[in-house]
Amino acid sequence: MGENQGVVSDGELRQLLYIFCKEGYKARETTSKVELIERKCLALFGRDYKYSVIYNSNGELCGHYPEKLIILEYMLAGNGQDFQEKSRESLYDIQKIRDLMCKSRFARCRQRFVVPIILYEGKHICRSATLSGGPEIYGRSGLDYFFSGGESLGSQAANSEEAFSRPDATSTSNEWPLFDRYRGQDIQLLKLLSVGCISDLMVENKKVKFGMNVSSSEKVDKEHRYADFRLVSVPYPGCEFFRDYRENGFNAEGLYYDWSQDFVDAGLSIPDSVTRMVGIDWRSYRSWDLVTITQNYLKLFLHEIKEGDSGLLIHCISGWDRTPLFVSLLRLSLWADGKAHKNLSAAEILYLTIAYDWMLFGHHLSYRLGKGEDIFFFCFNFLKHITSDEFSAVKRNQRSGSRTDSESCSESMVLLDTEKQRLGSNSSLNSNISITSLSSTSSPILICTGDIHEETTRNGEVAGNGSLRCYGSSAVDSGKPRTPTHRETSRSPTLQSPTSPMAVPRPSRRSSVEAAKSAASSTCGSWQLVSGAGSVKGFVSSRDSPLTVHSDVSSSSSGTASCGPVFDSIYEESQRKRKLDEVRIMFNKVYCAVVGSRYTVESGGISSMIDSIASKVGLKSTRGTMI
Image (cartoon, rainbow, N blue to C red; front, side, top):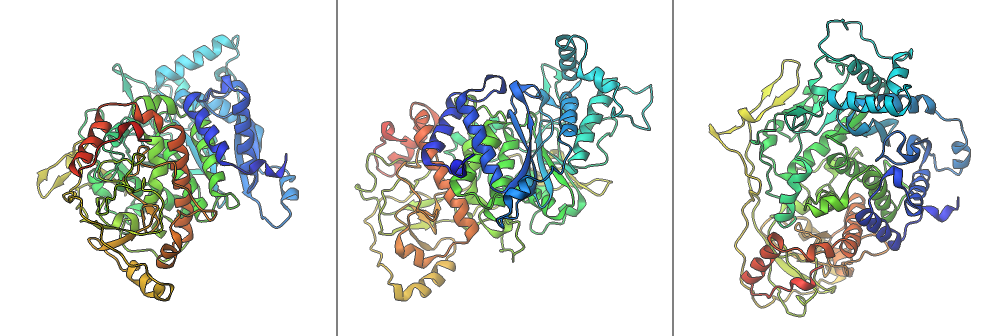
């Protein structure tokens, strides 16, 4: 394998996204293009880790898992002895792990068993689906028995010395016998991978379809089989909620989930030690908007892997929508801190994350795009909200506040310079006025920001076992019940009518120190300089969307937006921020070029909203040219 096989070009990123969007992935229907993607992933993992491979040929273990499941063992020293390290004997009994995966697959929905995918300081971050219910367990095991000629995995496990048996199990148990068998093997796999915490993103205790429980979860296991693990229930909106995200102009700020829906019966439950995390009132989780709930859950997962002494499992229902969202954010966050994949460039980590975390683990991008559920776009666009040190795995002085610099000012920005040559036919608008589509220029643009919206707190209750449990029935605000609607948005200032552009003098190099101090002390409501690339202090607008992120947006060789020498002298970005911004800008560029055209043919919500915004500021909508 050549050394340059790990290098990723812009064309390869586009090809990957095209295959992901148009063809998707199934282990039983792999093509030469998919095999090339898998080889590329192996090369990228091999740049930093000693790993072993578990083969899932033709989907033998799971039909929508990679054909080559990568088990990371340890990070390479990078001291020139990587070849010798890679040739060392594996730390794990790979055959034993594969056998447990094979035997435990019926314990989880769609046979999506537990798989380790990130390694942090010797601890595995794993993914899976939730626990399967009785109908699926018996249905799949019955089919397996029929097609295997009577030698099913279930019968093999029953005769195995590793079959699960609990000392308190009795013959009068209300559970069917296969529950003990398969869930016991699932527990053995978790313990073999040293997983100590299980985080469940489901908003339901059990998934119900047509009046039947089609899935379960560890938190409601009647026999308490998973009592040895720290069970963390962190209900997070399902992928259907991200249609509201699209209809809200791809703006997650001020977008609230409707927790009063009938099927929502899971409450937040986390260990008492985590509830004392500074700056987070976990009881008010139902009053958080999409940005805040995603940020706080990510902080929770980072806290678990940093402070805990064991691994972490993250799952939703099927494990291919919400699960890759948080898995990708964790991988990219650790990469930005130099704690994972430290030898990969921005293009390489982006390729690995899209290919391995999303495509090869079964996310149906084309199907989600067809339904308007843009959770995939949300994931990478959300990187701008986690650039500050409070999301860092490195021990640093924490910054004050719970939001990053890009969010500390209002979500609404009013563009004052509306020169026609800057807002040409290639420009487009989103839910307010995106400035990312402006043509590149070295002249700064002047904008003004508004106020921060206030969040409502909630009441909760403390469980008897020392963990915090919060439920919707106890959510009150000053004695008055309040349930946010699907598309409730925060306040935004009134759009100003276009005015003549205000001249902004170019700072000289001699005044760079004073300018940096001024920029660092800027607060909400103050005037701020915006680069020609259309970003405040290097950030793209908080209202980025596939419609407004123009393909002309590019990054320099160092990975930052093209801001010009003036901007570089005004604001010095942290390495973490620069790296995450580079990944986000690169993703937006590729996504716009490959997938953006699918948004232009739609009518209704987005187009009507854009036309409305454009008419308010006196600009004609150019719908046909929005990319």
